[in-house]
Image 1 (cartoon, rainbow, N blue to C red):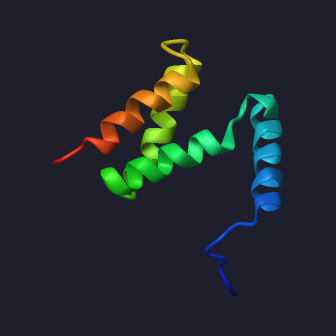
Image 2: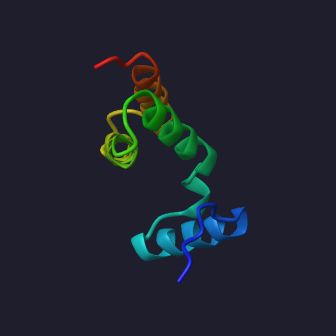
Length: 85
């Protein structure tokens, strides 16, 4: 069985729609590019395993109304690009 290293854009969109349906979310509220940029910044600036955890944390902050999704991503992306452990 092969495991593709790159997901074609149409498959990512299809998965996002399916996940949104499953979670009762509106697909139009999901900015895939914003999330991928966050994951890139964290994976490169901190560590790869930190990317999904950080995406979850940003989503949690946005979902709780602590800040907008864009502000949450901007803040942790900025922190990740300045990170030195």
